[in-house]
Amino acid sequence: MPARRLTRKAEAWFARHQRALPWRDSYDPYRIWVSEVMLQQTRMGVVLPRYQDFVTRFPTLRTLAAAGEEEVTAAWSGLGYYRRARMLRQGAAAVVERFAGRLPDDVSVLQTISGIGRYTAGAIASIAYDQPAPIVDGNIMRITARLFAINAALRSPGLARQAWKRAEELVKAAKSPRMFNQALMEIGALICRPKNPLCGECPLRR
Image (cartoon, rainbow, N blue to C red; front, side, top):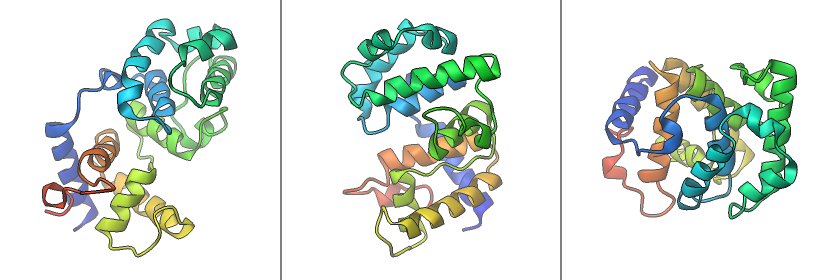
């Protein structure tokens, strides 16, 4: 299937089937950043109530940057992996100092901020700013392997390289990088599951 057609199918599916998640209420880069960090190694059901509490306590990047480490880790309670909270706070302080409190829209610049790697930088740039930045996580590697019939172990470097290459090609063909990347995330969570995938409902195979 041509890249342009595949991305349009994904975007149309997402417009109809996306879940109502609190960070989708706006394209605030700070809230997208918080949600992406929380969702690393933590289930959605655990994240949802704690995300709302966290952004109520720290509604802006500046309020997070100004908070003490103990206050931030206390607000992170229940999510585990507390290093994420410390890195998030350090990153927020760096954004205030270096970028006047505004997260950049450039992937390369975003990756110079404490705690922001390639995936998170792509998520912020694409979802908040609609930049054609690719994202690849375990879900998207699984989609790539199945969709393009790549015979490689899920976490192998070879599959990762191919997944990033495919993701970059596709997001550049997307009408809306913001919608397309979120569609891939959603398809990975709801359709292209690790076990019992719903292949018959996959918009990318039709």
